[in-house]
Length: 442
Ligand code: GLY
Ligand code: MN
Ligand code: MN
Image 1 (tube, rainbow, N blue to C red):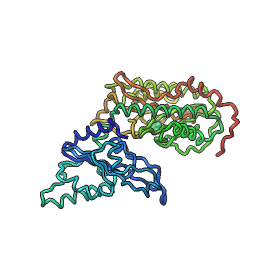
Image 2: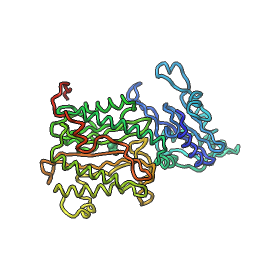
Image 3: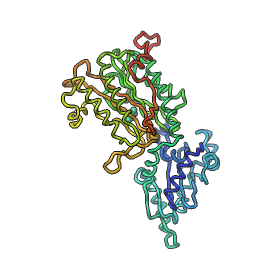
Image 4: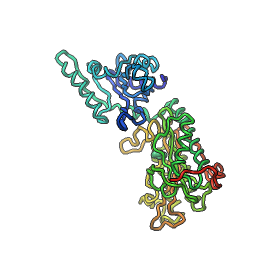
């Protein structure tokens, strides 16, 4: 898809590279076994600048006169018979708005010509040894021609750093796409809440999310989903999703879909039987209050750490109220006493990657929030059984995560899946009732 926003991103990069040259390859295909590949996912930087989905492709931007060149798989009818449609250079040039396009097989041969007499090279070095070697070979081929007056680039820039800075601010097309991803992910979480009941396997609940994501046209999951019943919720990266969901326990789902390359990242925690117990309610209300306070702290001019600081105040006070910590709240925060029960940060940038590109600090200072940035807010409490944790609280793990756009006025919350206790209990009226549909056993 040729998109004016994508051309505008290339234009910004043209202005940055001056008379230099920029080279951005897409991701390689990865073999799973024999002739069987892992599902293909393009490189986020390449996608950001091209919108071109096929593997074996490279974008070359030449400054002065400006030229955007694509190298891609050549048209090959025999191969298309097996692998399906492939644009080929001619169709890709027209459909995606490049100035020129060539078969990928010609890339290494054309590279010395492209590099010749360009003062600067913008490239990602040190991420892929195979690419580093190709670039070095191209540079050395130019250097061999020095006696004929040809010079190779002498200045090297990290193109990813440049693109990271651009990707931190979402344009209107990205914001629209992220709203779509959020809406589909919301629907997946609602479906999971409606389907959930005691005795179900975690992977069946995962399947409910996958079904909703695909039925609504998302590409699939943006990251391995976490469906964690009971104590499993206290394992932060639990992804096996292979246990049964027990009556009386909570289930934590951290799952989001990918739409046109953009991720949603939602966590909801709800009772397997649809009704919060008094102890679950107490902990849940603390995490929810922390999440609401964190969102309220997001506004232009605040730092990236403002939501985390707001979270720590509410969670630490909550841990004191639950009698899990004792002492003065400021002192407990200072000593990081909360870390036993809350050991991660409150959010991260979100975009093409679930943990998206972009710096978090400038020098020693945390980045200041500016409209167009998107981030998650995801406080939690993880009360593992152990010393000082009463039985009624032991094993409760709760996280609540939403996706936020920084706006002129403050924050827009993209994600709207039920979040308050009343909202959750309303969408799960029958969870405790016996089901006629049998649930596969583990
Ligand atoms: N799902 C990954 C995260 O929440 O950061
Ligand atoms: Mn998440
Ligand atoms: Mn997250």
